[in-house]
Length: 282
Image 1 (cartoon, rainbow, N blue to C red):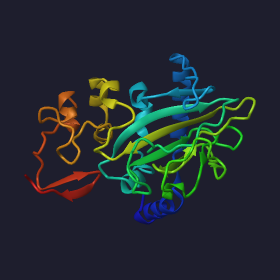
Image 2: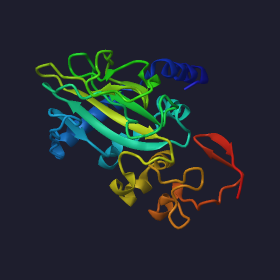
Image 3: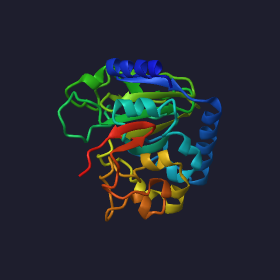
């Protein structure tokens, strides 16, 4: 992504709370095929509560389910926007597929930063990406969003939907949102359409993620991941220090050589995602 395009997306998020990018059709097809296969193999059923849905199939911890999902978090049309929005040391908070079925109800309005008890409005501590794996329409459950709501000084009420609009997108679109934007899953009023999407969440590197990748990923799975994905899953050290185990990075402990580090052993300059940062040594 060139800098002019990146800056345009960031300005749009600052103004509206979200922007939309596109991914390759062949990647989208692979993701759809993988979700369909896993739903059958794992016998995925609705969780039967308002937050997770009564007619919605959810698959959590996608990185542990199939390598097809590994292409999502570090996608070059998505990650540069995310890291410039929140933090270039960002890590993954959650990876979830959500397939909204006919008859699903409107989810309660919320933000994904709802558990963060700091005054609002503020700089985002999370970035939320919603991948439209099938067409998102007003009728089949397109995510409801309230543009500009990231500037609000409070969290929304669950029933506060009057200003919400459907985020209609063709398959292969990815909406990147400020973590404080009001949104919710839409109702599916169709008779036979399933609205398939995925939610890849990121948070600042010092914050606890929504899903626990340390326990959901087996060591051999982490070892097989590209370095940038290992970092996003939290197996490196945040700024060369935070998250160590007896002085070693989580990657070192599980035998993932790409993220094998010792705490506080960085040099004066270190890089991440091609950027250089100067660090004072202790």
